[in-house]
Structures are given as C-alpha cells and as structure tokens.
Length: 147
Image (cartoon, rainbow, N blue to C red; front, side, top):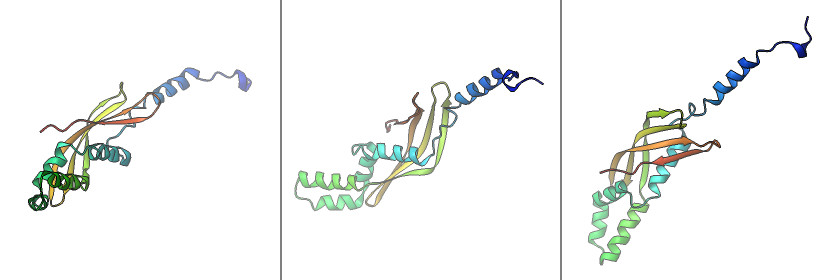
C-alpha cells in the first residue's frame, strides 16, 4: 500500500471542477431578487422627472382639481411636485429575463412598472441590466423610458 502523501490524486480533476465552479459567477445572476427589484424601483422613483410619473401626475383628476384652485403658476408647480413626491411605485410580480451574457456576467431583464399619483395610475415596461463586477458586487442599470 502506498503512503497517503504519495498517493496519486486526480489533481487535474479537482482543478477542472474548481474552474467550472468559478465560471458560474454569472449563472447565479437573476432578475427577480428583492434587492434587484428595490434597486430598479428606487432608481426610477429617485428621478422625479421621469416620464412615467409626469404622465401619471398630469393624468390625475385629483391633481388637476387642486391646480384649478391654485393661485398662480408657482402654486400649480408646487402642487404638481408634491403629487409626484407622493407617487407610489410597484414593479409587477412577473419579471422576465430577456438575455444572459455569461462572459460579461450580466443579464437583461424586463418587467412592468406602475406608478400611482393620487387617483391616476400609469404603467410601462421597464428594461434593466444586472451585472456582477469582478469584485462580486452587483450593479443594476435601468434603461430610460421611451414614449
């Protein structure tokens, strides 16, 4: 019997398994984790001039009614801005992965985002990319709305 230290271990087999596992970094990326969903909503909600919230605010009968009682353009602008700040955003339950780029450790995704301002709700497809950096961080970028 050979001593343990001199036994022939399949070193190349272990290396190939390690290399295979290290190549799976992009495989774990997903579109629908709570962190990703929150990042997408926050990115859009933080932009008070996004086209979706502007559309919902201008479509709201409640906002329009408040603006008819406003004294001057400054008051109307304040009412509109207050309504947009109070907007409620919701990303639909179904998020679809459109593509996966294993080499870039990235996935592109789509979902429907709804925003409610007072009594008006508007929804639009939102496209976003989830990418894993070389140091393991996850970055989310949201494509601008096209109307």
